[in-house]
Length: 79
Image (cartoon, rainbow, N blue to C red; front, side, top):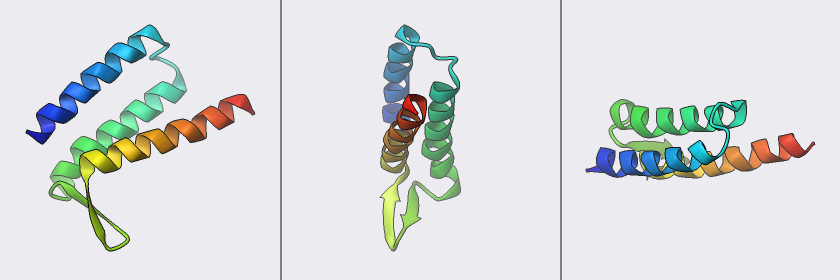
């Protein structure tokens, strides 16, 4: 069920990225990071990533990480 939900979010994100430049280094790094954390974390950590004594679901952690990475890379583009 989680993989289906995550997959549908990825497909929606891909449709948004098609309108933009998907092959830019910023978009590719964000996409690869989110996919590796979300899908890889389900297999490596059993669906939860330990983070400061909390067990955060991999999909939630991947989403938060993607948002933070996007904000960091936007600041670097402006600089």
